[in-house]
Amino acid sequence: MDTHIIPSINSPILKTNWKSIYIVAIVAFITSLEYAATNDWNYFCQLDPSATITFYGILRTVGGLSGGISTILAGWLCNRWKDTRYGSSKWGESSKKRSLISLAKMIFKITPSKIKRIFN
Image (cartoon, rainbow, N blue to C red; front, side, top):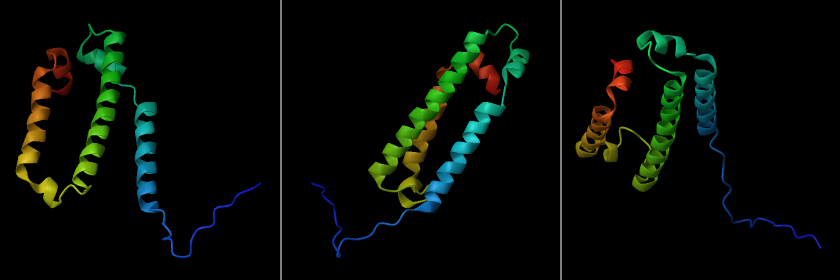
């Protein structure tokens, strides 16, 4: 026996937010182009001739993992604050901005000097 779900006349009809879907699709496409088109191994060898392919692979992996972790953290913060705008009142609090900037600076200070040479 087939059962069909018939929506109630009083139930709200949810509309798809296509603008957000287009933005996510464009960002995903640009990100895929970045990983497919760029090959910075040659530049990396020029910066540090003693670098190995294993170290380069570790750097690429850490970059991807840090992007994934920061995305999860940003999503969790936006859900907790119930706000996604950067310039809103909750992001506008200078103490939260300063703490995030301080965290980024501490992470950069504890990175090995071999990695720091890439960014300087």
